[in-house]
Length: 457
Ligand code: UDP
Image 1: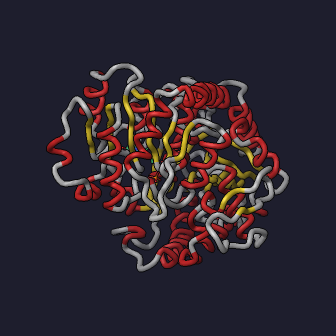
Image 2 (image 1 turned 90 degrees about the horizontal axis):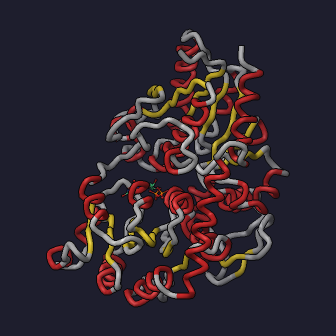
Image 3 (image 1 turned 30 degrees about the vertical axis):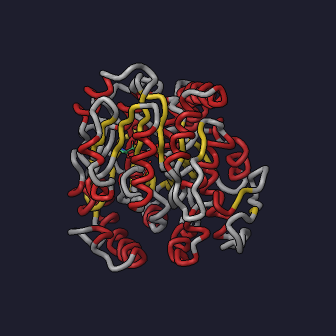
């Protein structure tokens, strides 16, 4: 039987893209003899397809037990009520766990819920903020919050100088929340992520040092930053954890057998995998361009079209699509797909989880960012890591079918794409090394655990 000397309470924001990286980090802590309890909301638990069995999960309340943030009138109303009810129910949980034989001694919280620091301080616990996005994006939000970057810019092609970056970036490459004036309240919430950071013991970032050296060195002078990623299941990286088939949490049911059977019949390095993640919606015109771009390309494709997006597919597209050319599914086991030997290219919206997964599995990308942090991630993929291209939008904001075709061809076939394909292999190796024994993230996790152990009762 494992005897634990430390107990971490993990508090993610209730969203798949937030809870999964924290779950994978939890598994690494657990393998180093730290007891883990994940606290999430009752409403979020109800939406999960399957719950992991390897870590303990407890429910707290955000004040909207039936529908979570969908039930709240506005996102700000949701966050405000979550703070009130969440603090209370989190305190009850900590008291309950105090009698469990191994009391909580640390809270690892999502900075969307900065009130967790007050709860930790009241109980005399260590606190660590866990940023699920990369350091470059956090750095941009930080400087907007501090008023160092004056936004929104006057023109989309305006160049913006951001401290911590060696070169300026275009306004179109910063997170959409920063440049859209109507998103002022969201940017306030994103800025609030930094509100309690001067009181925390650690700031953990879901990235790895080699990927973002420059900006990590810069931010480390401001906060006690430790990179602990990539937070991809160990079975896809260093294979040091004894994991079962449990990859992560999902609100959608993957069509695993359909996808894997189809991929097994495809030649090696021949398929384009296409997905826009769990929340991004495309305009109908964009869906149509994408559909024809994929159909006209030389390559076969596996395309995830969530059921709520299906009605935007061109008329008769599915009926006329032959199974040899392409497969459209409502959800897939993305890591298994990216790992499959038939996959050669990922056409992605560049959500941070998807981007990290492509890096870890060495799959070159065609990026089609839509909103949020996606434009910044796409910029990094193309210009800094040089492991993909960006499919350019026209003046209406639509990527046309010819552009999609051209980008896929460049990444998969042409001489010009050779460097991209080689870099993809290089980053895959670096990602594995970071979490493998003695790697940059592994050392940071070891240091974190040692500190927890020394302050344990
Ligand atoms: N994903 C999946 N199956 C799919 C599409 C996506 O499992 O068919 C997973 C993917 O592996 C990633 C997450 O959903 O972990 C999407 O997160 P990301 O940050 O990329 O995008 P978001 O959904 O937050 O926009």
